[in-house]
Image (cartoon, rainbow, N blue to C red; front, side, top):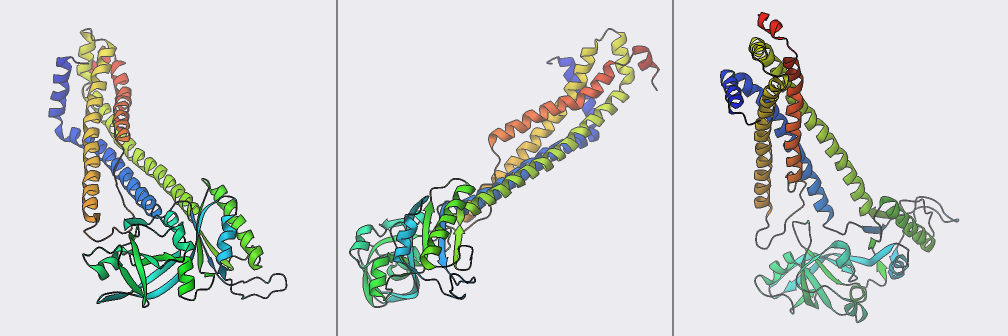
Length: 418
């Protein structure tokens, strides 16, 4: 393996046929380069989509009202379904449900502080919404159960509202006017995955009392104690059945209430990316095999050109194993060196792309990072090492057939070769 004469002979052969060696190595390097690019891109897409799902709890579910389209128990179609506080309590009791929050929306609410003012959306909710939507508290706190029980006039404002109204001042502890009614700011939050944080959050009970919301709800938000698609679908079915009994509509009437099951969407999306990853491996390995076949063909040509030389070696007493070793060593060297170059270039390019994307996506002061469909497009180190070992094995296989053929040549036949 470390015979200096063998290495000198291999390098002399490569030097003599520079273009042929370059094209052979290029085919292998291109194959592994494309494999790294495809795998990195696939990882980037998968990571980006998974990151966007993490903006809310993966096991989250949202339920909203609609109109009936199926007649039920003598009642006509076209009835509006209206949620109330007891619906949130009803859903909380369903097996498999984690935390729940009712939501009552107030759009274009006027917020003012001093001389500054603006129209923003207000989401009235229970404290559990923090867990469902993964809101990030930048200062202060979120609303709590005591705020709900005592109907406190408190509000958690989005970061954009804080910057618009308070500038560089501390907002927590100050009072803002919400439709001319003073509310104490107890926290500042940001919305993950959003380019803007223009929502404010206040206790549901307070909003229903102060802004004539009665006991109405616009929607329900909850988490599920489910890990599989089948479990989440079972919870969804139980919730639909419970609400259909409460509001007297056909459980099969999907227009009566709308349901967004995030766990179902997440699992289905991840399955798609698993299929894409398999497809990428098939394409990448196919490209790599094409390069390896090229190496094998070139080694066949090399054996053909050196037939007389091999005959002389065998006539002088060279063993078949030494002939096989010489051809195998040349094949493995070309494959490994070219493959390693392709590996380094491919992973290096992915790292550069990742660095550029991280720098461009880093939020500046006072801003939030938005959704992305491409995140961390790098290749795992273990995969890179496995690809390198695969190349070495492939190089050995590519050189074995021509090496075996070379070793089987009889000296008298080889010396007669033209």
